[in-house]
Image (tube, rainbow, N blue to C red; front, side, top):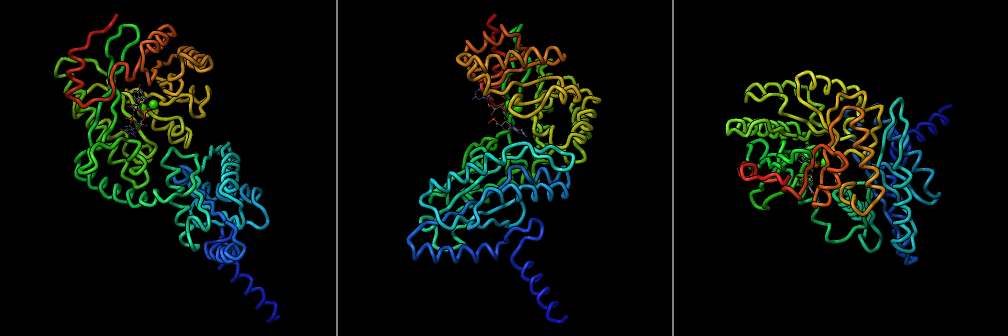
Length: 447
Ligand code: C2E
Ligand code: CA
Ligand code: CA
């Protein structure tokens, strides 16, 4: 009896020490162990080994909006899928959170590793049924190779992690092989993060630029989209693609978002005072802002404070946001509708919304993603997509805005397609408030 118990205990202890309790995959300790062995053998045989570092995109968002148990189920589900795609000799580990690592103990070249990475990425990139949620998953992958990118397990994991960050930064759903030039990336991000916290706390350097939107029939300026910029004390002007994700991952987004909302609504009041009446401002909202408890109250108080009519304000949300937690999104959108502001779906056509969802949401406007507008002249398929979106929107009683309008050809084609509003470099890029005021005062509609 005692002996069987001992063996059982030993097995349990081993399990705890070497395996991840949620997914049953190898943990960091076992991975390191296997890596050390693989490195020894690669050294002897003069072969290569590869480390694939995988991180799910927007996992935190799923966890925060749908709850940890859905997040856990998703991780277990992903682990099962990954298991199917590796060989017996490979080691699949979970390092914690949504970070998975695969050790390929023997590869001929980085091509082998790339093939595995892209195969995994393609398999994961689809709809997953988790409980009663349908989740769209993508992942970012970084790859490092022995001996090229590190001598020991620590260094190889660290460099694969760095490559993974680089993949995330270049638009997610991507994989990258480590290179030395990436080394400073994490360092840079940490500095930026520290500086952004300061900027938001002190409200310094956060600026809102405005890009005009043109009414397609009258050719007059109907309003503007508010686009945030960060004037960094030493690095100069930083664009949102470089810092919004930092704000989102550090919990700064709500505060930053509030600064942008206040500034934009204040600016509408200024324009009203100057006699430039009736402009409508479009403000981007990120998923994080939907998680705070005070969004609608804050917006109402700003409208009141600056005496701006809610009919002069529109909020842009992305399809991914609206899909993540339908119940919560629907509740907030309904509240926003009740206070009288309008709602636009941003980057329309790139996400996964369907007509059914659109009907459920109190939406006023669809913004056609600029990737469709870009090729609308040359590409018949994109032209058909845009035409379909516009007709569909109109039949649902929605307005359409085309973004990324860059040429006169774009303008004329979109006008002929009955697109309601146009926005893009053809008219102007996003400019500081005073410049916008001058722009509108000097603007002559070419009708
Ligand atoms: P978005 O909402 O799709 O904004 C449009 C982006 O396209 C802007 O880039 C704008 O400058 C750019 N753009 C406008 N016209 C053209 C054109 O004709 N051609 C091309 N190639 N580009 C054009 P920006 O300002 O760098 O913003 C990038 C993204 O950052 C935005 O994409 C939005 O998702 C996010 N963002 C910007 N401001 C805010 C903000 O205040 N809050 C939040 N949550 N996100 C923001
Ligand atoms: Ca937008
Ligand atoms: Ca957009």
